[in-house]
Image 1 (cartoon, rainbow, N blue to C red):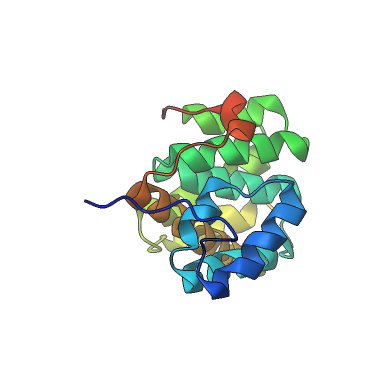
Image 2 (cartoon, one colour):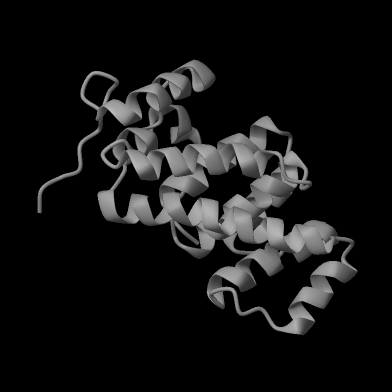
Length: 183
């Protein structure tokens, strides 16, 4: 099979170029995932917009990283777990939380564990969470809006997880310190 290219601003389709330029400005580099997604500008644009939309959810930055890591670990995405481990470090997610997510273990914080469990349930049940699962999530102090924001996070992260599985994205050097081989 032909390999999917790592696009640059020079090689990307016209529609993808502004997003790659914005990514470089935002991150100081263009992550390999975005370079691969550029082959399909609609995918790249969707992913880029969902990233911004999810960041404006009512979930805290740490809670957002719990969702994104739980989805990525459930889907076995080594690229995204490494990236979100790095991002979790940047938003001061406690090490024991990140390590629990990376190792497939319960999180010691009850609220974050409820978030991890609910997110993982949605992924594994393909959205068919039982009423008792939703109730347990709400009982942990989350809102009905946050139930649906977790759905947003699952959808957002599934785009990158599946892309990485298909195109075999190599981990960028910036994320190598948090490489993940799976739990």
